[in-house]
Image 1 (cartoon, one colour):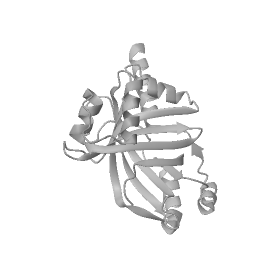
Image 2: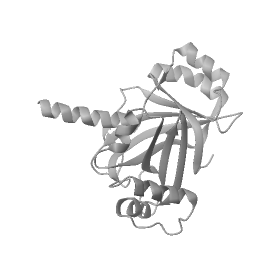
Image 3: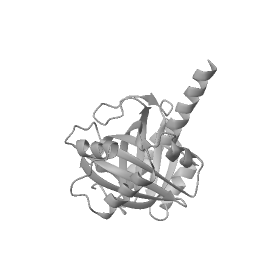
Image 4: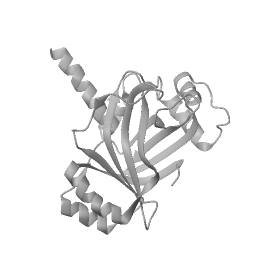
Length: 238
């Protein structure tokens, strides 16, 4: 299973306790396979305007919303490949578009407007438009997590991911440093995302019902922003 540049799918999220995950994995292991990257550390820099318009709009739950981020798989050095991604959601369907570059090139492009050499494709034009539409975009938040990703034995496009140790910070907004920050999840919790283009397999639907695992609305960037705002409010009250 390799990295893709475009996605169109539903992403359904669930918060699991350690016990729920352990019980669910007995069934996952019979129907799905851990992808070739195994256990992965994913690091992201989310970009936003000075007044946080992207995440504030997203938290209002509009029909259409979008985000821009820079992603690496593990800590990135200057010459490592990273991904510039636009993630859009319209009427419940997630669309993701991304292009790759070295960390040095991608950071120079996003932070300082230095053009990416050789990037004249449609996805690159969409990212250029995004940057031009939202004025003052800058690195806003670092978010990292540990991920295990599985694909269906009968349908490789059907995927389930488990994210743990989700951390956020506002300082050191670079992919060149190790993951650290404030935890978003409670101890033992994991965030499961089911990524599917059509209907969920019946075996998984039955198992979720049996274990009492219910869909939730959860945004890592949104939850981190809410924690940030809560901390600011508490400081003002102190």
